[in-house]
Image (cartoon, rainbow, N blue to C red; front, side):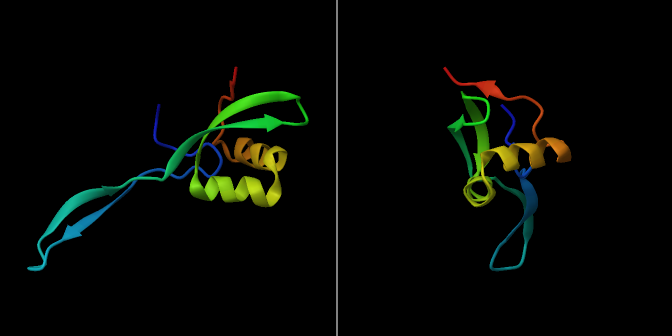
Length: 84
């Protein structure tokens, strides 16, 4: 499983650890991801999505159907896993 949000497309960012002496070493800023099940009312099915905290807020704000439509238009959502 890749560490990419299926709703917002967020993925790990690269930056630097900066020590007290200002030495810089590379590091990763990982995304806050969750595996969540959602009930898609329009299709009457349960789906499983890997979403970030920002993706959860997006779903709460605009709704699951609109968020899925927006993510598929932008190319973030390639496959939807059906949840058993």
